[in-house]
Amino acid sequence: MSQEIKKGKKKQIKKEKTSQKEEKSEENVKENLNENVKIKYGPSVKFPYQRVWSRCFLIFAVLFIVWYNSRQGKEVYLAKQKEILLSRTQNVECSHDYKVETSKYPECVPEKCGRIVSDKLVSSTETDVLLKIAVNGLNLGGSDGGASILDLHSGALSKGQGFIDIYTLPEAKKIFNSADFAIYKVVKTKIQHAVAHNFGVPSNKIYLTKHTFFSRMTNMSAKTIHDEYWHPHVDKETYESFHYTTLLYLNDYGRDFEGGRFIFIDKDNVNTTVEPRKGRVSMFTSGSENLHAVEKIQSGTRYALTISFTCDPNAAISDPNHRARREK
Image (cartoon, rainbow, N blue to C red; front, side, top):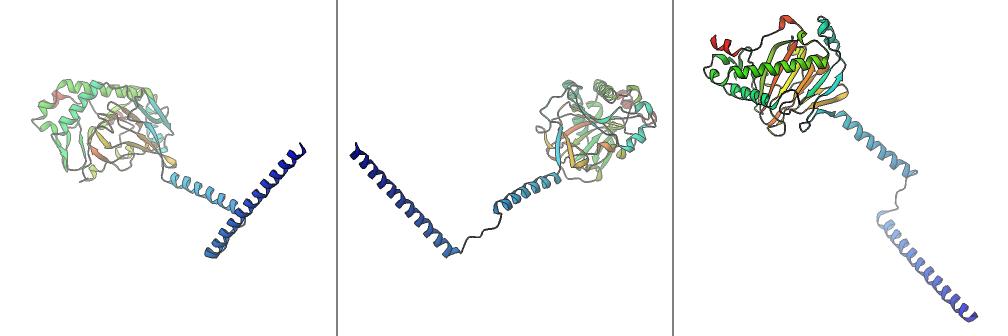
């Protein structure tokens, strides 16, 4: 047993010596490499607290990226095209100018200012009828630029770089009928009651007002100021009689056209976006609390119907009457 133990100890000693030799050889190799590096490139540079400085630099870089992105603006969605919304509301604080203006009509003051989107207010059949009116009517005219309008109340139709009265055209008698105008009135009434309900005002205290019109937008270059639809604006400043604005989209973003999204421009560089969807209704108070713009159309054609309401009974307009217009 003692001889076996001695043999075991000898083997262990040999292993230890071998491992020590290997370690020394590895150290020699590392030293030689380091010497070569030092000879070729000079001694390596070391800074005091090198880890601390590298971490500080990394944190600074992340903070810079966050700050830079925040300057570019943040986008939130009130309604995406693929969503089907019963109703979605975003409240905003009423602007001072809007409060002053509506205070002249106490029964017309909204409980809250804001925006509402609904995809269940207007039926697909009603939307199809209105789209047919828009397409057929606007095909009788059309702006030389990217934006054309058709106002059934006044008869104003974009033509070239100006406007004509669509009811003076013989073709108008063939494309409009009393049933179309009846559908138009039904949709207007639905939206009027929805505005009253959502903003907490009596429906008989808000009145249809000018300008209420169909619009067609394309990516054609603007020829006049009327074609430049993409500038940020406030409806109450553009149209004095407006107190409540509504939009009914007649075709689909991402399918019938690209671009043309509706964007509310809010404080703190935040944009709230509505993507058009066929049959979607967007309603909002018309004061400067709802500064907004429409993106430029990239391709395709965007159709919509703007229906506006006023608190001022003196600024009210009547529903369009197909028969009366034909007799004139």
